[in-house]
Image 1 (cartoon, rainbow, N blue to C red):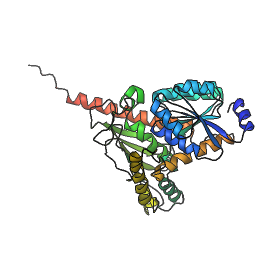
Image 2: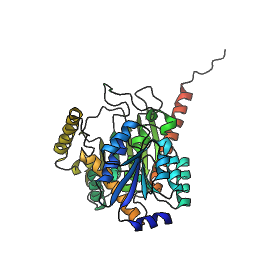
Image 3: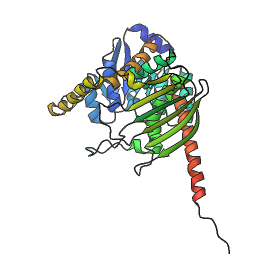
Length: 370
């Protein structure tokens, strides 16, 4: 952590925070931080005027149309990087130049090479890097880990996880054109495996230790540049567990349905995240969803904390990061964790590509000579 940061923290009990990007998840982080004791959101930046207006309505007094200008103009202790993946590296470099710690949306970067450069920059500047891998903060996932760590089902030879979303195109009929970057491999780094799979990799290594990718396949239900389905087979050498992961952005999900399934098949029984959902989850989530629909007609801001089951996890992850910074500690989910999920994704992409090439070679028409 940079010495200038420590000096600023001693000047005030509140941790000063900037929000870089006020799209959907950026607004969640903004409202989460605004509700935290000992944290002050002093500024936000977004290239879209409508998003800056949302930030101002949420109580931010100063907004900028460029995150570089914000970082150069404000005295910050930390910044949330809620920008598209292709801007993460530059934002971290700009923050490092001003000695500002960063909490970066997943995926940390578009590749391990890019992540290595980012983390090297952070080390040289003495800033901390946290990553928003929130799946481990959900109460159902925490319940699975507690039951597993307590040995309630003994050895677990097999586990599976599935995570599905409706993707950048949303549920039809589409009311607005989607942003272009999630469907651009160069901008996003990949498709559903980077958008959703990295969350799964993180929670699986949180449970079982380091994973080794054995096989993978990618699929597309639409003619887009990135995969919208991925299936990965892995081993966890430390625990002797075989794991399958499936993620996809092809399902027309409807909240408040839970879109993640985790099952641990132990020798004395099964642990499922479905068994650890809050009793009032569906009732409270449905109430929040109805409130958000009503807000469209009253022109009020939607309640970004509803359904609270999902978004409370974002609050807790950011709060943990802020507490670590305040106490001069490493973030509990740091840059190394973010890089590790990228490494697993790259291994899966490579194996899937090898399989596609082999299948293509097998389908080639043999040359016939007479």
